Structures are given as C-alpha cells and as structure tokens.
Image (cartoon, rainbow, N blue to C red; front, side):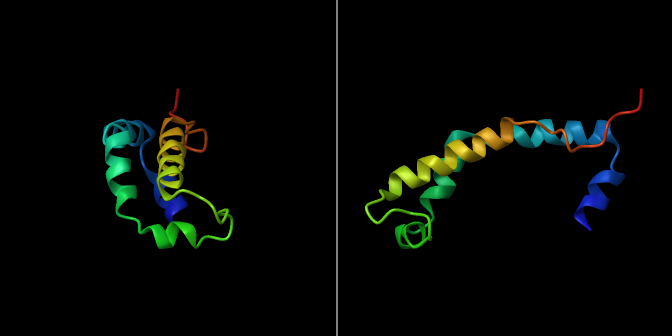
Amino acid sequence: MLADLVAALDPAVLAKLDAELAETVTAEALTEITALVPDSFLLSMNSVPQDADPADLRQRYVDYLLTRCAGSRAWWPEEDA
C-alpha cells in the first residue's frame, strides 16, 4: 500500500524529495498540462455549470493544484528528535 511505502521512508529523505519535486510544480507547467485537457472533458463533469468557460475551469485547476502543493504535509511521518 502506498501509505506504508511513504511511512517507511526516512522523513529527512522525504522532505528533500518533496522540496525538489515542489520546484517543478509551477503555474507555467500546470497551465501547459491543463491546456491538454479537452474542453469537452472539462464541460462534461457533473458539477460544472452549463455556461462554464473552459479557460476559467483550467485556471481553477491550476490554482487548486498550486495551493495543494504549497499546503501542509501534516500527514507525513515526523523526524525523530
């Protein structure tokens, strides 16, 4: 299980990997990635209003993912004191 794998990692190694990977999650990268999602897919989701703008939906995903990336890692194992 993934949770077991993460828990088995050395917390210092995990923090280092997170810092390295977080640098690659940029607004530019996420904008490029979300541009690959077809409008029809974005507009077909249940919670999307009928008059939704695909560009606005893409930007909302970018904002959401950047917030998640910058957020707390409280679920990670603690380093031993």
